[in-house]
Amino acid sequence: MTEQTNPVKKIKKVKKRSQLKSIWFQFKKNKLAMFGLLIFVVLVMIAVFSGFFLDYDTQVIGQSMKERLRPPSTQHLFGTDEYGRDVFARIIWGTRISLFVGLFTVALAMSTGTIIGALAGYYGGRTDNVLMRIMDVFLAMPGTILAVAIVGALGPGIVNVLLAMSICRIPQFARIVRSSIISIRGQEFIEAAKACGTKDRRIILRHILPNAIGPIVVQATLHMATTILGVAGLSFIGLGIEAPIPEWGSMLSAAKSQMRYQPYLMIFPGVAIMIAVLSLNLIGDGLRDALDPRMKN
Amino acid sequence: MLKYIGKRFLMMIPVIAGISFILFTIMDLTPGDPARALLGEYASQQEVDQLREEMGLNDNFFIRYGRYVLNTLQGDLGTSYRTNTPAIDEIRARFPATLKIALLAVLIAVAIGIPVGIVSAVKQYSFTDIVSMMSALLFTSIPPFWLGLMMILLFSVQLRILPAVGSDTWKHFLMPAAAMAAAQMATLIRMTRSTMLEVIRQDYIRTAKAKGAPPRRVIFRHSLQNALLPVVTAVGISFSNLLGGALIIENVFGISGLGTLMVDSVKGKDSPMLIASVMFAAFVGGLVNLLVDVMYIYIDPRVKSLYVKG
Image (cartoon, rainbow over all chains, first blue to last red; front, side, top):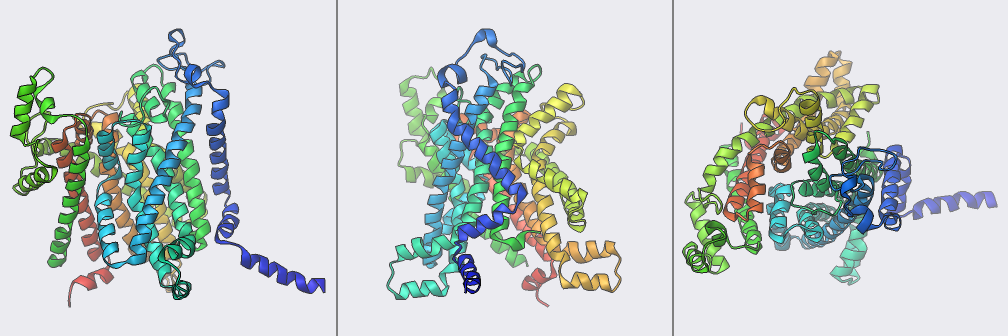
Protein backbone atom coordinates (compact mmCIF):
# COMPACT_ATOMS: atom_id res chain seq x y z
CA MET A 1 0.00 0.00 0.00
CA THR A 2 2.60 2.48 1.10
CA GLU A 3 4.68 1.80 -1.97
CA GLN A 4 1.76 2.70 -4.14
CA THR A 5 0.93 6.01 -2.49
CA ASN A 6 4.48 7.23 -2.32
CA PRO A 7 5.00 8.03 -6.00
CA VAL A 8 1.71 9.89 -6.06
CA LYS A 9 2.81 11.98 -3.14
CA LYS A 10 6.06 12.76 -4.86
CA ILE A 11 4.35 13.94 -8.01
CA LYS A 12 2.07 16.15 -6.00
CA LYS A 13 5.08 17.66 -4.32
CA VAL A 14 6.70 18.48 -7.65
CA LYS A 15 3.54 19.97 -9.03
CA LYS A 16 3.06 22.19 -6.04
CA ARG A 17 6.46 23.77 -6.39
CA SER A 18 5.97 27.50 -6.90
CA GLN A 19 7.78 29.46 -9.58
CA LEU A 20 10.27 30.88 -7.10
CA LYS A 21 11.03 27.46 -5.69
CA SER A 22 11.64 25.96 -9.09
CA ILE A 23 13.92 28.86 -9.96
CA TRP A 24 15.88 28.21 -6.77
CA PHE A 25 16.04 24.51 -7.66
CA GLN A 26 17.67 25.36 -10.99
CA PHE A 27 19.79 28.11 -9.47
CA LYS A 28 21.32 25.79 -6.89
CA LYS A 29 22.79 23.61 -9.62
CA ASN A 30 24.81 26.51 -11.03
CA LYS A 31 28.11 26.61 -9.17
CA LEU A 32 29.21 30.01 -10.43
CA ALA A 33 25.90 31.56 -9.46
CA MET A 34 26.07 30.00 -6.00
CA PHE A 35 29.58 31.41 -5.66
CA GLY A 36 28.20 34.84 -6.57
CA LEU A 37 25.43 34.44 -4.01
CA LEU A 38 28.00 33.47 -1.37
CA ILE A 39 30.07 36.61 -2.04
CA PHE A 40 26.93 38.71 -1.97
CA VAL A 41 25.81 37.26 1.35
CA VAL A 42 29.25 38.00 2.81
CA LEU A 43 29.04 41.58 1.50
CA VAL A 44 25.60 42.01 3.04
CA MET A 45 26.93 40.72 6.37
CA ILE A 46 29.83 43.14 6.17
CA ALA A 47 27.42 45.97 5.42
CA VAL A 48 25.10 45.06 8.26
CA PHE A 49 27.67 44.31 10.93
CA SER A 50 30.34 46.92 10.11
CA GLY A 51 28.42 49.32 12.34
CA PHE A 52 29.15 47.15 15.37
CA PHE A 53 32.89 47.00 14.79
CA LEU A 54 33.69 50.41 13.41
CA ASP A 55 33.04 53.80 14.89
CA TYR A 56 32.10 56.08 12.01
CA ASP A 57 33.35 59.33 13.51
CA THR A 58 36.76 58.15 14.65
CA GLN A 59 37.68 55.18 12.49
CA VAL A 60 36.00 55.97 9.18
CA ILE A 61 36.09 59.75 8.78
CA GLY A 62 38.35 60.70 11.69
CA GLN A 63 41.51 62.35 10.36
CA SER A 64 44.97 61.89 11.79
CA MET A 65 47.73 63.90 10.16
CA LYS A 66 50.62 61.97 11.68
CA GLU A 67 49.27 58.71 10.23
CA ARG A 68 48.87 59.98 6.68
CA LEU A 69 49.86 58.02 3.56
CA ARG A 70 51.18 54.95 5.33
CA PRO A 71 51.67 51.98 3.01
CA PRO A 72 49.82 48.72 3.76
CA SER A 73 51.04 47.05 6.96
CA THR A 74 49.68 44.77 9.67
CA GLN A 75 48.34 47.80 11.49
CA HIS A 76 46.70 49.33 8.40
CA LEU A 77 45.88 46.44 6.13
CA PHE A 78 45.28 48.62 3.05
CA GLY A 79 47.39 51.59 4.22
CA THR A 80 46.11 55.05 5.08
CA ASP A 81 44.97 57.90 2.82
CA GLU A 82 46.03 61.52 2.58
CA TYR A 83 44.11 62.39 5.75
CA GLY A 84 45.51 59.47 7.73
CA ARG A 85 42.30 57.47 7.56
CA ASP A 86 42.52 53.70 7.47
CA VAL A 87 41.62 52.59 3.93
CA PHE A 88 40.50 49.15 5.07
CA ALA A 89 37.95 50.59 7.49
CA ARG A 90 36.72 52.98 4.80
CA ILE A 91 36.31 50.24 2.24
CA ILE A 92 34.41 48.11 4.75
CA TRP A 93 32.11 51.03 5.48
CA GLY A 94 31.83 51.72 1.77
CA THR A 95 30.13 48.34 1.37
CA ARG A 96 27.24 49.79 3.36
CA ILE A 97 26.99 52.85 1.16
CA SER A 98 27.18 50.99 -2.16
CA LEU A 99 24.80 48.21 -1.22
CA PHE A 100 22.36 50.66 0.35
CA VAL A 101 22.31 52.93 -2.69
CA GLY A 102 22.21 49.97 -5.07
CA LEU A 103 19.36 48.27 -3.25
CA PHE A 104 17.19 51.33 -2.78
CA THR A 105 17.78 52.63 -6.29
CA VAL A 106 16.68 49.34 -7.76
CA ALA A 107 13.74 49.04 -5.37
CA LEU A 108 12.51 52.50 -6.31
CA ALA A 109 13.09 52.02 -10.03
CA MET A 110 11.55 48.56 -9.95
CA SER A 111 8.36 49.61 -8.18
CA THR A 112 7.82 52.72 -10.32
CA GLY A 113 8.80 50.91 -13.50
CA THR A 114 6.53 48.01 -12.65
CA ILE A 115 3.55 50.29 -12.12
CA ILE A 116 4.16 52.10 -15.41
CA GLY A 117 4.85 48.89 -17.31
CA ALA A 118 1.83 47.15 -15.80
CA LEU A 119 -0.53 49.99 -16.67
CA ALA A 120 0.85 50.23 -20.21
CA GLY A 121 0.80 46.50 -20.79
CA TYR A 122 -2.57 45.78 -19.22
CA TYR A 123 -4.60 48.62 -20.65
CA GLY A 124 -2.79 48.89 -23.99
CA GLY A 125 -4.02 51.40 -26.54
CA ARG A 126 -3.57 55.06 -25.76
CA THR A 127 -2.29 54.54 -22.19
CA ASP A 128 0.36 52.22 -23.54
CA ASN A 129 1.33 54.60 -26.32
CA VAL A 130 1.67 57.67 -24.14
CA LEU A 131 3.56 55.95 -21.32
CA MET A 132 5.93 54.03 -23.54
CA ARG A 133 6.75 57.00 -25.78
CA ILE A 134 7.77 58.91 -22.66
CA MET A 135 9.92 55.96 -21.65
CA ASP A 136 11.47 55.94 -25.14
CA VAL A 137 12.57 59.54 -24.67
CA PHE A 138 14.32 58.61 -21.44
CA LEU A 139 15.90 55.60 -23.11
CA ALA A 140 17.26 57.70 -25.95
CA MET A 141 19.59 59.47 -23.56
CA PRO A 142 22.56 57.48 -22.34
CA GLY A 143 21.83 56.72 -18.67
CA THR A 144 24.96 58.32 -17.30
CA ILE A 145 24.16 61.62 -19.02
CA LEU A 146 20.64 61.77 -17.61
CA ALA A 147 21.92 60.91 -14.14
CA VAL A 148 24.54 63.64 -14.34
CA ALA A 149 21.92 66.20 -15.39
CA ILE A 150 19.57 65.23 -12.57
CA VAL A 151 22.34 65.29 -9.97
CA GLY A 152 23.31 68.68 -11.36
CA ALA A 153 19.78 69.93 -10.69
CA LEU A 154 19.31 68.30 -7.30
CA GLY A 155 22.89 68.68 -6.07
CA PRO A 156 25.18 65.84 -4.94
CA GLY A 157 24.45 63.66 -1.92
CA ILE A 158 23.29 60.13 -1.25
CA VAL A 159 19.53 60.70 -1.56
CA ASN A 160 19.82 62.77 -4.73
CA VAL A 161 22.14 60.27 -6.39
CA LEU A 162 19.73 57.52 -5.42
CA LEU A 163 16.84 59.43 -7.00
CA ALA A 164 18.79 60.27 -10.15
CA MET A 165 19.95 56.72 -10.66
CA SER A 166 16.50 55.26 -10.14
CA ILE A 167 14.87 57.68 -12.58
CA CYS A 168 17.35 56.44 -15.19
CA ARG A 169 16.45 52.82 -14.51
CA ILE A 170 12.64 53.18 -14.57
CA PRO A 171 12.24 52.83 -18.37
CA GLN A 172 14.14 49.54 -18.49
CA PHE A 173 11.88 48.02 -15.85
CA ALA A 174 8.77 49.45 -17.47
CA ARG A 175 9.71 47.81 -20.75
CA ILE A 176 10.37 44.38 -19.28
CA VAL A 177 7.20 44.41 -17.18
CA ARG A 178 5.11 45.62 -20.09
CA SER A 179 6.27 42.89 -22.43
CA SER A 180 5.79 40.11 -19.91
CA ILE A 181 2.35 41.43 -19.02
CA ILE A 182 1.34 41.53 -22.65
CA SER A 183 2.37 37.89 -22.99
CA ILE A 184 0.25 36.93 -19.97
CA ARG A 185 -2.72 39.24 -20.55
CA GLY A 186 -4.33 37.10 -23.21
CA GLN A 187 -4.16 33.82 -21.30
CA GLU A 188 -7.23 31.96 -20.19
CA PHE A 189 -6.86 32.33 -16.46
CA ILE A 190 -6.95 36.10 -16.87
CA GLU A 191 -10.11 35.77 -18.94
CA ALA A 192 -11.50 33.61 -16.16
CA ALA A 193 -10.60 36.15 -13.50
CA LYS A 194 -12.23 38.88 -15.54
CA ALA A 195 -15.34 36.78 -16.03
CA CYS A 196 -15.57 36.39 -12.27
CA GLY A 197 -15.72 40.15 -12.00
CA THR A 198 -12.31 40.58 -10.44
CA LYS A 199 -11.17 44.19 -10.30
CA ASP A 200 -8.34 45.27 -12.63
CA ARG A 201 -6.08 46.11 -9.71
CA ARG A 202 -6.46 42.67 -8.25
CA ILE A 203 -5.94 40.98 -11.60
CA ILE A 204 -2.69 42.88 -12.14
CA LEU A 205 -1.39 42.42 -8.61
CA ARG A 206 -2.53 38.89 -7.83
CA HIS A 207 -2.77 37.16 -11.17
CA ILE A 208 -0.41 38.81 -13.63
CA LEU A 209 2.56 40.17 -11.69
CA PRO A 210 3.38 36.96 -9.79
CA ASN A 211 3.65 35.24 -13.16
CA ALA A 212 5.92 37.95 -14.52
CA ILE A 213 8.21 38.09 -11.51
CA GLY A 214 11.07 36.09 -13.05
CA PRO A 215 12.40 38.55 -15.64
CA ILE A 216 11.84 41.43 -13.19
CA VAL A 217 14.06 39.81 -10.57
CA VAL A 218 16.78 39.11 -13.14
CA GLN A 219 16.69 42.72 -14.28
CA ALA A 220 16.77 43.94 -10.69
CA THR A 221 19.93 41.97 -9.91
CA LEU A 222 21.73 43.08 -13.05
CA HIS A 223 20.62 46.68 -12.53
CA MET A 224 21.90 46.66 -9.00
CA ALA A 225 25.31 45.77 -10.46
CA THR A 226 25.20 48.59 -13.00
CA THR A 227 23.90 51.00 -10.36
CA ILE A 228 26.88 50.30 -8.10
CA LEU A 229 29.15 50.91 -11.10
CA GLY A 230 27.25 54.04 -12.04
CA VAL A 231 27.26 55.56 -8.57
CA ALA A 232 30.99 54.92 -8.29
CA GLY A 233 31.44 56.66 -11.64
CA LEU A 234 29.35 59.68 -10.62
CA SER A 235 31.22 59.99 -7.33
CA PHE A 236 34.48 59.71 -9.21
CA ILE A 237 33.73 62.80 -11.31
CA GLY A 238 32.53 64.64 -8.22
CA LEU A 239 28.81 64.49 -8.97
CA GLY A 240 27.88 61.67 -6.67
CA ILE A 241 28.36 60.93 -3.04
CA GLU A 242 30.69 63.47 -1.57
CA ALA A 243 33.63 63.30 0.80
CA PRO A 244 34.09 62.44 3.61
CA ILE A 245 31.56 59.62 3.10
CA PRO A 246 33.65 56.59 2.12
CA GLU A 247 32.02 55.79 -1.22
CA TRP A 248 34.36 53.61 -3.30
CA GLY A 249 34.22 55.89 -6.36
CA SER A 250 34.97 59.04 -4.41
CA MET A 251 37.83 57.24 -2.67
CA LEU A 252 39.26 56.54 -6.12
CA SER A 253 38.78 60.15 -7.09
CA ALA A 254 40.78 61.29 -4.05
CA ALA A 255 43.42 58.64 -4.69
CA LYS A 256 43.99 59.86 -8.23
CA SER A 257 46.22 62.72 -7.10
CA GLN A 258 48.37 60.32 -5.08
CA MET A 259 48.64 57.86 -7.93
CA ARG A 260 52.38 58.13 -8.58
CA TYR A 261 53.59 57.37 -5.09
CA GLN A 262 50.64 55.69 -3.36
CA PRO A 263 49.19 53.38 -6.01
CA TYR A 264 47.73 51.09 -3.34
CA LEU A 265 45.17 53.79 -2.54
CA MET A 266 43.74 53.29 -5.99
CA ILE A 267 43.83 49.52 -6.16
CA PHE A 268 41.67 48.45 -3.21
CA PRO A 269 38.52 50.53 -3.76
CA GLY A 270 38.45 49.40 -7.39
CA VAL A 271 38.76 45.77 -6.36
CA ALA A 272 35.91 46.30 -3.90
CA ILE A 273 33.64 47.67 -6.65
CA MET A 274 34.63 44.80 -8.91
CA ILE A 275 33.82 42.13 -6.31
CA ALA A 276 30.41 43.61 -5.52
CA VAL A 277 29.51 43.98 -9.20
CA LEU A 278 30.86 40.56 -10.09
CA SER A 279 28.80 38.83 -7.41
CA LEU A 280 25.62 40.50 -8.62
CA ASN A 281 26.40 39.69 -12.25
CA LEU A 282 26.95 36.05 -11.35
CA ILE A 283 23.65 35.92 -9.48
CA GLY A 284 21.83 37.68 -12.32
CA ASP A 285 23.24 35.31 -14.95
CA GLY A 286 22.41 32.33 -12.75
CA LEU A 287 18.85 33.53 -12.28
CA ARG A 288 18.40 34.08 -15.97
CA ASP A 289 19.62 30.59 -16.76
CA ALA A 290 17.42 29.16 -14.01
CA LEU A 291 14.37 30.93 -15.41
CA ASP A 292 14.92 29.81 -18.92
CA PRO A 293 17.09 26.68 -19.04
CA ARG A 294 16.85 26.71 -22.81
CA MET A 295 19.00 29.84 -22.95
CA LYS A 296 21.77 28.06 -21.14
CA ASN A 297 24.28 26.66 -23.55
CA MET B 1 14.06 51.92 -48.85
CA LEU B 2 14.67 55.67 -48.94
CA LYS B 3 11.14 56.10 -47.71
CA TYR B 4 11.93 53.86 -44.75
CA ILE B 5 15.05 55.84 -43.87
CA GLY B 6 13.10 59.09 -44.16
CA LYS B 7 10.39 57.74 -41.91
CA ARG B 8 12.89 56.64 -39.30
CA PHE B 9 14.52 60.05 -39.51
CA LEU B 10 11.20 61.76 -38.83
CA MET B 11 10.61 59.46 -35.86
CA MET B 12 13.70 60.88 -34.23
CA ILE B 13 12.17 64.35 -34.05
CA PRO B 14 9.64 63.74 -31.25
CA VAL B 15 12.29 61.91 -29.23
CA ILE B 16 14.76 64.78 -29.54
CA ALA B 17 11.97 67.24 -28.71
CA GLY B 18 11.08 65.16 -25.65
CA ILE B 19 14.69 65.14 -24.53
CA SER B 20 14.92 68.90 -24.88
CA PHE B 21 11.76 69.30 -22.78
CA ILE B 22 12.95 66.96 -20.03
CA LEU B 23 16.36 68.57 -19.85
CA PHE B 24 14.90 72.07 -20.01
CA THR B 25 12.70 71.19 -17.04
CA ILE B 26 15.54 69.59 -15.09
CA MET B 27 17.83 72.54 -15.70
CA ASP B 28 15.05 74.95 -14.81
CA LEU B 29 14.87 73.30 -11.40
CA THR B 30 18.60 73.71 -10.94
CA PRO B 31 19.32 76.38 -8.36
CA GLY B 32 21.47 79.34 -9.38
CA ASP B 33 20.98 82.44 -11.46
CA PRO B 34 22.49 82.35 -14.97
CA ALA B 35 22.52 86.16 -15.16
CA ARG B 36 24.54 86.27 -11.99
CA ALA B 37 26.84 83.58 -13.36
CA LEU B 38 27.43 85.56 -16.56
CA LEU B 39 28.15 88.86 -14.84
CA GLY B 40 30.24 87.47 -12.03
CA GLU B 41 30.27 87.93 -8.27
CA TYR B 42 30.87 91.65 -8.27
CA ALA B 43 28.03 92.83 -10.49
CA SER B 44 25.36 94.90 -8.77
CA GLN B 45 21.86 93.54 -8.24
CA GLN B 46 20.55 96.16 -10.68
CA GLU B 47 22.79 94.92 -13.47
CA VAL B 48 21.76 91.35 -12.78
CA ASP B 49 18.08 92.29 -12.87
CA GLN B 50 18.57 94.13 -16.13
CA LEU B 51 20.30 91.16 -17.74
CA ARG B 52 17.62 88.81 -16.46
CA GLU B 53 15.05 90.97 -18.21
CA GLU B 54 17.11 91.03 -21.42
CA MET B 55 17.59 87.28 -21.39
CA GLY B 56 13.89 86.81 -20.76
CA LEU B 57 14.56 84.81 -17.64
CA ASN B 58 11.61 86.38 -15.83
CA ASP B 59 9.09 84.96 -18.28
CA ASN B 60 6.85 82.01 -17.62
CA PHE B 61 8.41 78.53 -18.02
CA PHE B 62 6.39 77.65 -21.10
CA ILE B 63 7.14 80.94 -22.83
CA ARG B 64 10.84 80.36 -22.26
CA TYR B 65 10.64 76.79 -23.52
CA GLY B 66 8.65 77.91 -26.55
CA ARG B 67 11.26 80.55 -27.33
CA TYR B 68 13.97 77.93 -26.94
CA VAL B 69 12.24 75.60 -29.38
CA LEU B 70 11.79 78.41 -31.92
CA ASN B 71 15.46 79.29 -31.70
CA THR B 72 16.48 75.67 -32.04
CA LEU B 73 14.35 75.27 -35.15
CA GLN B 74 16.22 78.20 -36.65
CA GLY B 75 19.48 76.39 -36.01
CA ASP B 76 20.40 78.36 -32.90
CA LEU B 77 21.14 75.93 -30.10
CA GLY B 78 21.62 78.69 -27.58
CA THR B 79 24.57 80.49 -26.12
CA SER B 80 26.73 79.15 -23.34
CA TYR B 81 26.25 80.94 -20.04
CA ARG B 82 29.87 80.45 -19.12
CA THR B 83 31.77 81.30 -22.28
CA ASN B 84 29.09 83.41 -23.98
CA THR B 85 29.79 81.64 -27.27
CA PRO B 86 27.31 79.67 -29.41
CA ALA B 87 26.85 76.18 -27.96
CA ILE B 88 27.14 74.58 -31.37
CA ASP B 89 30.68 75.92 -31.84
CA GLU B 90 31.81 74.36 -28.61
CA ILE B 91 30.20 71.03 -29.53
CA ARG B 92 31.84 71.15 -32.93
CA ALA B 93 35.21 71.71 -31.30
CA ARG B 94 34.81 69.02 -28.68
CA PHE B 95 33.02 66.24 -30.53
CA PRO B 96 35.89 64.93 -32.72
CA ALA B 97 37.90 63.76 -29.70
CA THR B 98 34.90 61.87 -28.28
CA LEU B 99 34.06 60.40 -31.67
CA LYS B 100 37.64 59.20 -32.19
CA ILE B 101 37.70 57.45 -28.82
CA ALA B 102 34.27 55.92 -29.31
CA LEU B 103 35.08 54.67 -32.81
CA LEU B 104 38.41 53.27 -31.69
CA ALA B 105 36.68 51.59 -28.74
CA VAL B 106 34.03 50.02 -30.98
CA LEU B 107 36.79 48.87 -33.31
CA ILE B 108 38.72 47.23 -30.46
CA ALA B 109 35.58 45.65 -29.02
CA VAL B 110 34.49 44.24 -32.39
CA ALA B 111 37.98 43.12 -33.45
CA ILE B 112 38.45 41.11 -30.26
CA GLY B 113 34.92 40.38 -29.13
CA ILE B 114 33.47 38.77 -32.24
CA PRO B 115 36.39 36.42 -33.10
CA VAL B 116 36.73 35.33 -29.47
CA GLY B 117 32.99 34.72 -29.30
CA ILE B 118 33.12 32.60 -32.46
CA VAL B 119 36.02 30.50 -31.17
CA SER B 120 34.23 30.07 -27.86
CA ALA B 121 31.11 28.81 -29.55
CA VAL B 122 32.86 26.52 -32.02
CA LYS B 123 34.99 24.99 -29.28
CA GLN B 124 32.33 25.00 -26.58
CA TYR B 125 33.50 23.85 -23.12
CA SER B 126 37.13 23.81 -24.26
CA PHE B 127 39.84 25.50 -22.22
CA THR B 128 39.75 28.52 -24.57
CA ASP B 129 35.99 28.79 -24.11
CA ILE B 130 36.20 28.72 -20.33
CA VAL B 131 39.02 31.28 -20.23
CA SER B 132 37.23 33.66 -22.59
CA MET B 133 33.91 33.37 -20.74
CA MET B 134 35.64 34.00 -17.42
CA SER B 135 37.45 37.05 -18.75
CA ALA B 136 34.22 38.32 -20.29
CA LEU B 137 32.56 38.01 -16.90
CA LEU B 138 35.43 39.84 -15.25
CA PHE B 139 35.46 42.65 -17.81
CA THR B 140 31.73 43.33 -17.39
CA SER B 141 32.35 43.79 -13.67
CA ILE B 142 35.39 46.08 -13.80
CA PRO B 143 34.52 49.78 -13.59
CA PRO B 144 35.84 51.25 -16.88
CA PHE B 145 37.26 54.33 -15.18
CA TRP B 146 39.16 52.16 -12.73
CA LEU B 147 40.51 50.07 -15.59
CA GLY B 148 41.66 53.36 -17.12
CA LEU B 149 43.41 54.36 -13.91
CA MET B 150 45.10 50.98 -13.70
CA MET B 151 46.27 51.37 -17.30
CA ILE B 152 47.74 54.77 -16.50
CA LEU B 153 49.49 53.20 -13.55
CA LEU B 154 50.97 50.48 -15.72
CA PHE B 155 51.66 52.13 -19.07
CA SER B 156 52.36 55.72 -18.04
CA VAL B 157 53.73 55.59 -14.52
CA GLN B 158 55.57 52.24 -14.55
CA LEU B 159 56.47 51.50 -18.16
CA ARG B 160 56.34 55.10 -19.45
CA ILE B 161 55.27 54.11 -22.94
CA LEU B 162 51.92 55.90 -23.25
CA PRO B 163 50.93 59.46 -22.32
CA ALA B 164 48.49 59.68 -19.40
CA VAL B 165 46.58 62.87 -20.23
CA GLY B 166 45.70 64.99 -23.24
CA SER B 167 44.39 64.36 -26.74
CA ASP B 168 47.11 65.36 -29.19
CA THR B 169 48.27 62.17 -30.89
CA TRP B 170 46.70 58.77 -31.57
CA LYS B 171 48.71 57.45 -28.63
CA HIS B 172 46.56 59.56 -26.34
CA PHE B 173 43.43 57.83 -27.53
CA LEU B 174 44.69 54.30 -27.11
CA MET B 175 44.19 53.91 -23.35
CA PRO B 176 40.82 55.65 -23.03
CA ALA B 177 39.48 53.67 -25.96
CA ALA B 178 40.78 50.39 -24.54
CA ALA B 179 39.35 51.16 -21.10
CA MET B 180 35.93 51.86 -22.58
CA ALA B 181 36.12 48.95 -25.00
CA ALA B 182 36.64 46.30 -22.30
CA ALA B 183 33.05 46.11 -21.09
CA GLN B 184 31.59 46.33 -24.61
CA MET B 185 34.01 43.65 -25.75
CA ALA B 186 32.82 41.37 -22.96
CA THR B 187 29.20 41.90 -24.03
CA LEU B 188 30.09 41.11 -27.63
CA ILE B 189 31.95 37.93 -26.66
CA ARG B 190 28.96 36.62 -24.74
CA MET B 191 26.48 37.73 -27.35
CA THR B 192 28.40 36.26 -30.29
CA ARG B 193 28.95 33.01 -28.43
CA SER B 194 25.34 32.49 -27.49
CA THR B 195 23.87 33.37 -30.90
CA MET B 196 26.50 31.25 -32.64
CA LEU B 197 25.67 28.31 -30.39
CA GLU B 198 22.02 28.69 -31.24
CA VAL B 199 22.71 28.75 -34.96
CA ILE B 200 25.19 25.87 -34.87
CA ARG B 201 22.42 23.58 -33.63
CA GLN B 202 20.17 24.30 -36.58
CA ASP B 203 19.40 21.64 -39.13
CA TYR B 204 20.91 23.55 -42.05
CA ILE B 205 24.30 23.55 -40.32
CA ARG B 206 24.11 19.78 -39.98
CA THR B 207 23.16 19.59 -43.66
CA ALA B 208 26.09 21.76 -44.64
CA LYS B 209 28.45 19.60 -42.64
CA ALA B 210 26.91 16.42 -44.02
CA LYS B 211 27.33 17.48 -47.63
CA GLY B 212 31.01 17.93 -46.89
CA ALA B 213 31.40 21.71 -46.72
CA PRO B 214 34.76 22.62 -45.22
CA PRO B 215 34.52 23.66 -41.51
CA ARG B 216 35.71 27.17 -42.33
CA ARG B 217 32.85 27.63 -44.77
CA VAL B 218 30.34 26.18 -42.31
CA ILE B 219 31.47 28.59 -39.61
CA PHE B 220 31.73 31.78 -41.61
CA ARG B 221 29.28 31.34 -44.44
CA HIS B 222 26.52 29.26 -42.85
CA SER B 223 26.71 30.08 -39.15
CA LEU B 224 28.20 33.53 -38.73
CA GLN B 225 26.05 35.23 -41.33
CA ASN B 226 22.95 34.00 -39.55
CA ALA B 227 24.27 34.83 -36.10
CA LEU B 228 25.36 38.33 -37.00
CA LEU B 229 22.05 40.16 -36.70
CA PRO B 230 21.79 40.35 -32.90
CA VAL B 231 25.52 41.02 -32.73
CA VAL B 232 25.20 44.04 -35.01
CA THR B 233 22.41 45.33 -32.78
CA ALA B 234 24.71 44.90 -29.79
CA VAL B 235 27.44 46.87 -31.56
CA GLY B 236 24.97 49.70 -32.15
CA ILE B 237 23.90 49.72 -28.52
CA SER B 238 27.50 49.64 -27.37
CA PHE B 239 28.22 52.75 -29.41
CA SER B 240 25.62 54.78 -27.54
CA ASN B 241 26.83 53.30 -24.25
CA LEU B 242 30.26 54.57 -25.19
CA LEU B 243 28.93 58.10 -25.68
CA GLY B 244 27.64 57.97 -22.10
CA GLY B 245 30.77 56.30 -20.80
CA ALA B 246 32.87 59.08 -22.31
CA LEU B 247 31.53 61.31 -19.55
CA ILE B 248 33.68 59.58 -16.97
CA ILE B 249 36.55 58.19 -19.05
CA GLU B 250 37.35 61.60 -20.53
CA ASN B 251 37.63 62.87 -16.99
CA VAL B 252 40.18 60.16 -16.13
CA PHE B 253 42.39 60.96 -19.10
CA GLY B 254 41.88 64.73 -19.14
CA ILE B 255 40.46 64.74 -22.64
CA SER B 256 38.41 67.75 -23.62
CA GLY B 257 35.60 66.04 -25.45
CA LEU B 258 31.81 66.00 -25.35
CA GLY B 259 31.82 64.13 -22.03
CA THR B 260 33.88 66.65 -20.13
CA LEU B 261 31.83 69.39 -21.78
CA MET B 262 28.64 67.93 -20.29
CA VAL B 263 30.15 67.47 -16.85
CA ASP B 264 31.52 71.01 -16.87
CA SER B 265 28.14 72.35 -18.01
CA VAL B 266 26.38 70.56 -15.17
CA LYS B 267 28.90 71.78 -12.63
CA GLY B 268 28.75 75.32 -14.05
CA LYS B 269 24.90 75.35 -14.29
CA ASP B 270 25.32 76.08 -17.99
CA SER B 271 21.94 74.81 -19.14
CA PRO B 272 21.98 75.89 -22.83
CA MET B 273 25.32 74.15 -23.27
CA LEU B 274 24.16 71.01 -21.47
CA ILE B 275 20.86 70.71 -23.33
CA ALA B 276 22.56 71.29 -26.66
CA SER B 277 25.27 68.71 -26.01
CA VAL B 278 22.89 66.05 -24.71
CA MET B 279 20.54 66.61 -27.64
CA PHE B 280 23.53 66.28 -29.93
CA ALA B 281 24.61 63.03 -28.26
CA ALA B 282 21.08 61.63 -28.52
CA PHE B 283 20.96 62.65 -32.17
CA VAL B 284 24.23 60.86 -32.89
CA GLY B 285 22.95 57.82 -30.97
CA GLY B 286 19.75 57.88 -33.04
CA LEU B 287 21.74 58.09 -36.27
CA VAL B 288 23.82 55.07 -35.25
CA ASN B 289 20.65 53.11 -34.50
CA LEU B 290 19.28 54.04 -37.88
CA LEU B 291 22.54 52.96 -39.49
CA VAL B 292 22.31 49.60 -37.74
CA ASP B 293 18.76 49.07 -38.97
CA VAL B 294 19.79 49.93 -42.51
CA MET B 295 22.69 47.50 -42.21
CA TYR B 296 20.25 44.71 -41.43
CA ILE B 297 18.88 45.10 -44.90
CA TYR B 298 22.26 44.37 -46.39
CA ILE B 299 23.14 41.57 -44.00
CA ASP B 300 19.88 39.70 -44.01
CA PRO B 301 17.95 39.08 -47.24
CA ARG B 302 14.87 38.26 -45.14
CA VAL B 303 14.81 41.80 -43.81
CA LYS B 304 15.61 43.15 -47.24
CA SER B 305 12.54 41.52 -48.74
CA LEU B 306 10.38 43.53 -46.37
CA TYR B 307 11.54 46.86 -47.76
CA VAL B 308 12.74 46.28 -51.29
CA LYS B 309 10.23 45.13 -53.85
CA GLY B 310 10.97 42.76 -56.67
